[in-house]
Each structure stands twice: as structure tokens, then as C-alpha cells.
Image (cartoon, rainbow, N blue to C red; front, top):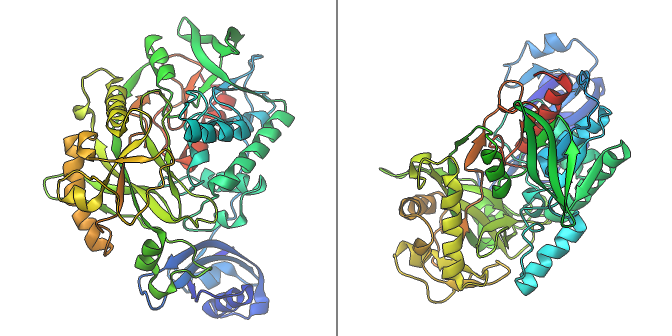
Length: 531
């Protein structure tokens, strides 16, 4: 199969156009192409008066593919093998069922892999199924009555269920293709396979996850919602079983295999593991806020006169800068046409995140503005002190916001002028529990706000108008990743054998795709049965 890069079209194109351009590039007749699929589709918006799509195409042809490819630079045309996932051999000899704690992307893909291997995994999820969980989130936004086990962080699908279903990743792994194919086979849009900026949308992701759960159950797996892992039973440095809480009762379950896919917000579980002697270390994480602009402004800044084209949809951006004598400031998890969401999972704390539906047609677009926090910035050398810093920020935000989960916010113009906001401007914040105009310097560490002060000015030069006075900063975004890494070896196990830390909560992933890939890798390690 040949892969052809840098095929450009206008915003209106047909499949026939792609066949013709591929044939013209290769110097063959269109009829010589036996098949054509899109490998990647991106938007080139560098010239605002001539925005184009850029494709990488995979074609099968009648002819000598090696000879044809040899006539081109490798970055233009190359011979590639069609990706095919192969399930590893199941070498697991144990009669015990493996247990997976957590049913976010890492847990789901680990469970799917083990279920297909015939191992009938038991999955424990402290939150609820996606439909009930959605109702719990809606109720919190209406009544301010928080369910600490069923919210934007906990429940079926993990934190990513209430994001954007964003599938961007900076990791490199052939398993990424496997993850995308699984999502599509369970109902996600086909375009995520080839889109340069793939997303499913919060409104569609829940249905996809539900279908994955149904397959796991059909293969003998068991998913128990409202069940929280409370203890691991260890003897002679081996897992002997676990204890979980179900309907207020404590249940023991014998197992020699536990995959920990607990997510980055399960602080109580990590503290329990630390108390059991599981080796872990401090890990850098990031802190900041959400910045909101009108969607139409962001669309025009990126697409010029093409803004609003149905072929383009809502525009995104990605920026990073390094102010002199300061840390880096970067945007993260940008949500075009989305909303800022209430992402706390603990009483008396405020946490924000971003979310978009598939259509991305909301009034505003938002992104995280984040600054890295290194272990030397933590309150102490204690391995869990990163949690203390997160909690301090979140509890302070709760108080500054008014003590009822209202979030503190500040206009960008006021922030840059170093004065508290006392009223809102033209941009209407989308955080559903309301905002209190204030000074986010009261909430975030000084090193973070100093970097934001300098970095925002630089970003205002990258996107003209990015620092508009009425743009809104809502704080804090404190759960971008875990401040702890649970140490694992080449067999994906901790110093407690049979314990497999996995995904974001263990410090080995940073988004839906990387967490899903890590879930597959951990499942493969279980199947290899190495000790």
C-alpha cells in the first residue's frame, strides 16, 4: 500500500477529486487505483484567504508499488503496511478472575482486552453508569448537592466522558489506531480515524462507552457500579485479594491480579495504597484556569472570512510560550463552542474543566491555561504532598467563590492590570453554577499567576485579540493530571506483585487515548503472566 502525503483540496471536494489527485501525483491512471482511504485530514489555515484541506491518502494500485515509491522523497510517497492488531497469546495460568478498579478509558480498554481473552474480568467503578451519572451531574448544577462518588470525575467513562471526547495525543504507539477503531466500531463517527484533531463529543461519547460495556458483559465480564475499592489484601508482597464497598457493605474478593485504573482524582485510593507500602513518587503536574472567548471571535481569528463554513466547524487553537525568567504557559484541552464545567469531586472545593458536544456550536470557546508545577513547589517532601497543594487551591477557590461551588473569575483586562474584577463584560461565562468576579491571584500560586501575566501578553501576539478585556478567566483548573506516579516495572507491576497501576491516575497517561493505550498494555502484561 502506498501512502501519499500533502494532497491539498479546497473546502469542497469529492471522493473522485481525491482519486484524481492521487493518480496525478503518482503518474498513473485513476483506473489503476484499486482502493483509496483517507489516512489523515488536516486544515491548513496559514493563509486566511486560501484555507485548504491537506490529506494523507493510502492507496492500493495495480503495479509495482516499490518502484513507484522509489521515484519520490519518502515524506511524499512511501510504502506502508496496513495496520492489523493481533491479540497476544493468553499465558495466564491462574484460576482467579482479574479485577479492574475504575471504568474510565484505561479500565474500559483493559477490560475489553481481558474479556476477549476469556478472562471474565470483574470491574469496580465507584461512580454510576453513564445515564445515572449524567443525571447526578445535572442535579449538582441545579441544587449544588454534590455526590462525591458520581460526578464529572467519577463514573462510567471517567473524567473524559464530560470533556469533548477529544482524542488528540502526543504519544506514539501503533495501539492508537486500535483505540480509534474500537471507538468507531462502537458507534463513534468514522472521521475520528483520519481527522488531525479527532473528537467524539460529550453527547455521543456516553453511548459509545455504553456499547463497550455491553460487549464486555456479553463476554463474561462483570461491571459493578457504585462499588469503591477500599483495601488491597497483601501477603508476602503478593496481591491475595481486595475489599470493596457496595451498598454500604464491605465485600472481600479473592484475586491475584488488580489493574488500578482509578483516574487522577481518586486521592483516597492512592492514600490507601501508600499506606499499604505501594511504592510511588511525586510527579509534576499543571495548574491554571479556563479562558473563555466568544466562539465567533476564535473562529474568525483562525479562519478569517471562511469562519462559519460548515466544512470547517468551530475553530481550535494550541499555543505555548516561555516568558523570560519564567515557566512555560500553554493551552490544553481546548473546547471549541464548548462550556466550562464544574469538575469537583470533593466537598468544599471548586474545580473547573472544559466540555464540548459533537456540534461544537456553543456561544463560547474555552481552553485551559496551564503552568507546570514541579515537585520542588510542593508543600513538603511527602510523596502525597501534591494532593495537598491541589486541595489547598480548590478549597481556597471555594471560599473566594462564595462557599457554594460558585467559581471565582476575573476578566483578562483586569488580570493584566492587576486589579480585581467587580463585574462581568460582554463575554458571558458558561460555568453552570455561576461565577464571582474576583482576583484569581487569591486562588492560584504566585508562580502560576506571574507566568500567566507574562505569557498572556505573548499569546495576545499569536492570536490578535486573545487578551481582549472581557475574556473571562475562571479558576482553578487543578486536575489536568495526577501529582503522583505509582512505580511499576517492565512487567507493569508494582513492588506488590499482581498490582498493575494504569492510566492517568497512576501517572502514565494524559488523556483519553493515552489512557486507553495504557489500559491495553496493562491487559497484555496480565496475559503474559510474568512475575
